[in-house]
Image (tube, rainbow, N blue to C red; front, top):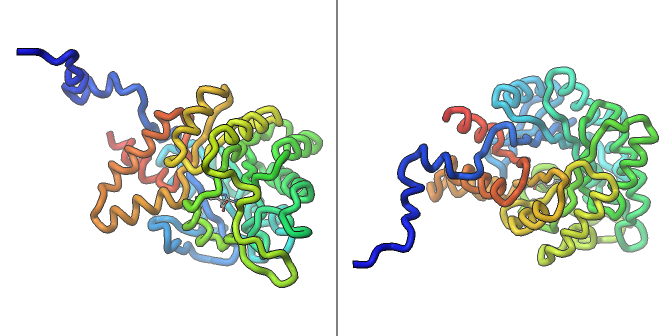
Length: 331
Ligand code: PBG
């Protein structure tokens, strides 16, 4: 009789053997939790398309911050929903804006690493990530506003600002503005390879940031002229390389699961710490499938998140952070 060439099953013999040879493991400390802070509400409000996720009022932040601390995640990524939107998204950089206030509160109450999303789309009435001019999104005018927004976040106490508008030169503009304003110790996590993705659907619904028509302004239906074409890994490498040169301290690939190849390539090519963002659509896909009894939620999150770490991400930004951290801490 002929024997198998190798007996791989010896490495799967028991749980402890499997642990020893696993090569990668998830840890609550590798997680960052996104928080939505809404200026227009006074009580926590559920997000319909993202089961288990909420808009928080400023006054309600204490509770969620405590949950983050007891779950043992390392940081939070703050998104704001302002009371007012306008053509230039002016609330994004307001000193008493919702993110600025939220950051002050979080820093007062905790040691969590505070990342802030720097973009205009939640703040503009047309939903684009930059200033509309002529018949498009004006890159260089947007840079000034992003830089101003980043400085206001730094002023409030953010540890890392996270530009997500996909404007060319945004990292350089922000680095320069931070340094000039005396914030050389505030870091930049750039959404370096951010793809134009349908997986942002539930998020845009949640923050009302889908591009929409406003009278008198050009009607641009999607973000295809600034977010990346999902077909090209080489463009992603150029984007990351530019951001590293411009001064990014951490680079990010977003979404995560459909782009494991990009995460792996980025890991091989750059020494800069790498974040991956498991976005709203990735989260809701698992949640809704689990609600219908089609998947085991816990196993599906652990599997996808382990895959993202295996591909090479140092840490994961995910809406499942608190639940997953609890599961990990049970073991
Ligand atoms: C803002 C921004 C978006 C997300 C994070 N920052 C939306 C977008 O680009 O449309 C998406 C996050 C998610 O889907 O979880 N530009």
